[in-house]
Image (cartoon, rainbow, N blue to C red; front, side, top):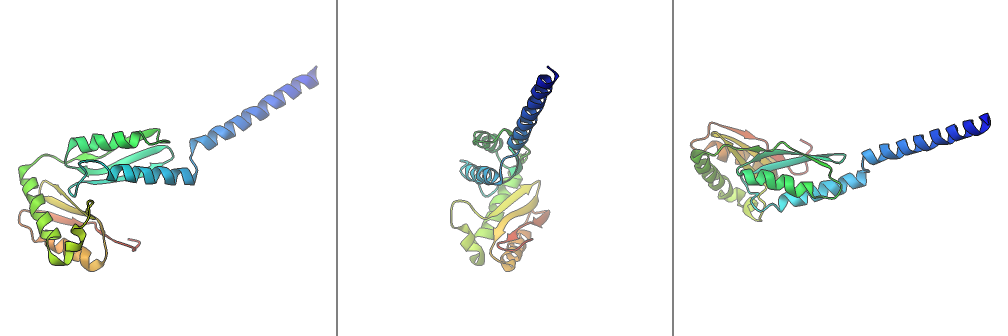
Length: 183
């Protein structure tokens, strides 16, 4: 009788530990699954209807949770981003930390002047091609931040100089990254 009881307890403990190990594996997706989720999040964000050159959205995939960060001009872009990511297979939680920039006619006019100063300058016109512009222009209360990717340090510096030359800017933060560099 004791032997049967010990055998039953041992079997139950073995099954419980195997079940616990399987649950722990389910808590974290494989690297391949995380890569797939990351690619789908990027695709969904780029397909947002009102995601433009004056918006900047980034994301981080941690397990089954996606954290959205950045700045957008329209509140609907923030909610659209969350909705698009929420429906991706494998995503269980979306932490939406996207900031909606305050509405300001002065900032709107500054955005247009910055766009013209950067994208219509002959040396930077190559970045104007395509639907998704690689240089993001974020304006908040007259303070400008450039985000995105360019081909060279010269283009990064030139975009920063062009933005600094626009009247009405209080400060310019150049966060542009050079394609292929580790910075």
